[in-house]
Image (cartoon, rainbow, N blue to C red):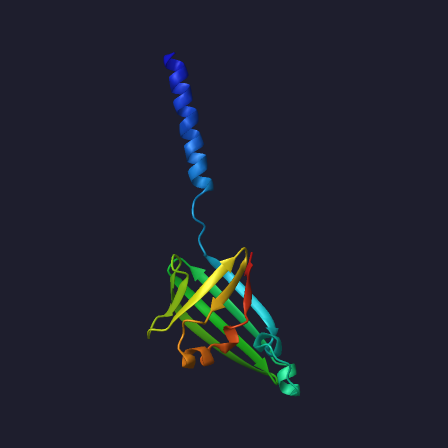
Length: 140
């Protein structure tokens, strides 16, 4: 009887460990990337030949409480890179610049990351309009 109790205790302990590991919270850590035409990202068709050929690459890397946002615009043979170092709050799903008070919310469904600009001031929304329709995919 004593051995049966020990065996049952061992089985319950193993089951509890497996259950806790399986149900553990997943982190948002990883790299999310999108490359597209500026017209598609802005949600409009442009008659300008320069904008038709313009491309944008958006890459967000999240590692624990730090993040890096890279936006590279390619237009008329020129590249314009923008790089921002960010503070990440994975519980609140928010990104903050290391300076200033702007907070950008994000959502993750499956392997797709989108940005929520609704809580930003109108001037911040205008500056980040390129992120409004962005859907970044997690890269492996």
